[in-house]
Image (tube, rainbow, N blue to C red; front, side):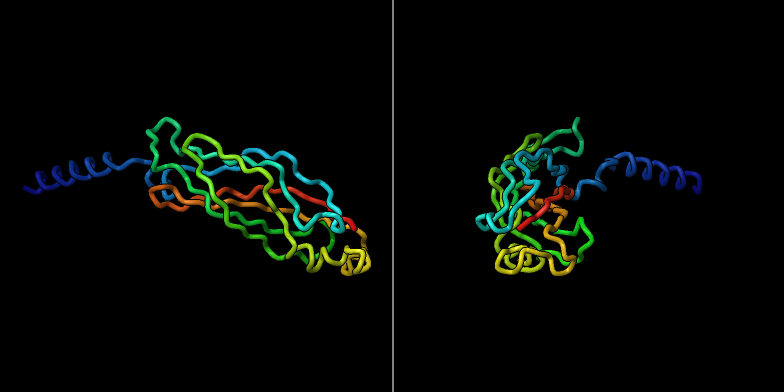
Length: 183
């Protein structure tokens, strides 16, 4: 009797474990990943006195990539992009940084394709009119009061956030680049 019970238990465990798909622990994002794939028109140097209020990226592309490229895909894996954020850190010896730039955005990245945004703001008036960038305005002296330099180098970290049509949250890994600000 004991051998039969052990055999039945073994058979049940084999059935349960073979029915489990090995990738189910990685499908919290609805089976897709978002990836920033390309930048065009990335600013390298910006004069704070002549920006017009916003610093923009001319074009940015985001791909919606299936986690399992050989698996079945469907419309519920499409991602509605809802927002993006840009965080800043210093690329020079300064420590002061602008406040985070957060914006709502709309678009749908279909599964296994890309969405393109043109003229995307990555820094706005709230960042330009507060320290440290406001120090570079001619009216403020044109010099970073923390470092004594007439330029500020900032690292930008941009991420996009969305939801699959089935309701799973998904976001890109941060894309990084550096911009130098002058008076």
